Image (cartoon, rainbow, N blue to C red; front, side, top):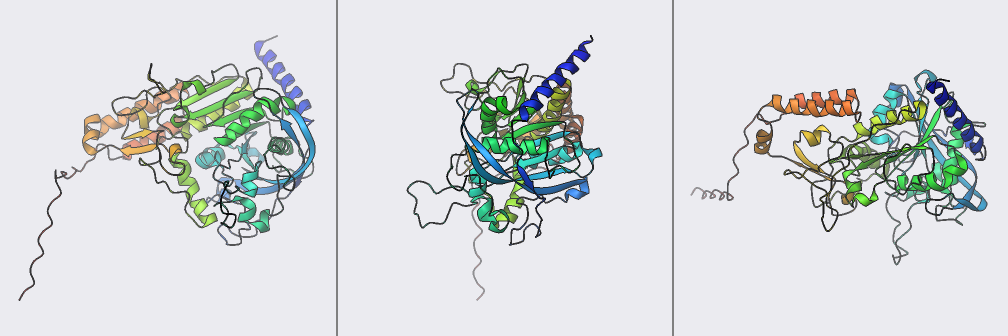
Length: 495
């Protein structure tokens, strides 16, 4: 029997085992799509939270929101081990948001099932934001799941806080729109507040997508594979889910962990792809997990945990839906690395499809380097301050600024990295001519394409941006005086 036939048989057998195990996951009751009774930004808030600013119909996509409800188990989840049910029968009702091709012909068969991140006190579409254009171009379906208490019910006040003080800002979807979301609950009527229902909630959302009974959240689409995706805190939750719940439910086909995830057990066969920014590895190489036949991790030099491009996408939506700017970026260094890590993320989605569908593993990638013998973990840097090692995009290989994953200061500044543009003199030193700069960008972009870290369309965009950039500056910068000039004397009034 040919090797390709053996591989196909193995894949089919695994799929059958997976589907049989998935039958143990009950189907939730699905309601919807929930009517969008107001335009985004309307004070009534009777619309889907964080509805994209783009009209998705222009891209052949629809957005629909559904409520799912059922009863969930609580689980004991010992580190790195299969979980056990500790109690059952806890009622819940939550929501899922679906963004999908309107035509089955445009659907590529893959659902990105995102565990919504709640670190900011509300659900964040962390995967959708920087990658939405790639998602719609390639025909993915994206489904966001509100699995955790904070996303719906909001954060609780800190211990010792004034009980008469107003609740924390951005305090969950129920407070944001009691009209739309007031019936949702993932605490079993307030009796369970430790998020222990979240794992069953996520599994049942996946089951509603994979084997719908009654309302089909995907309409006429039929998924071939479901990827569990999550960013940061949600990637950590998915790490627990992978270790303790996946062996029980087997309801997803792979995992994609963005800027997070750790401590995965090594005896499971499900594929896992991870993206780590420079911020994420800065605590030291001991947090890394080694690559294997079922695990790949890529590290992107100069990129930050929370990217500039995510902020550009999300900030207008947060301001629209909350009426206030997002958290202030009062940081020690100018915030937000401009390294375009989303191009790497987009390539990873497609490579994960190939890995699951065809068995073709993604390439390995170099790791960010650390100073040997340093007392504390210290990233090795060149004379410009740029990290050594890792995947090196043109912003790093042909730099016009110092981009790092390091910052400090108020709120979430430690996650933003920094962006400090070089002065004209430094740019002229690095690139005597504009042609030299374009050549450097082109070489880096095409090297990354050849290595498999970005796709050709991303490379041409980078090259075109370099062609249009004013590097080195064409206008000479005015000399900076060594000391401030004295103000001109005020003329005396005419007699």
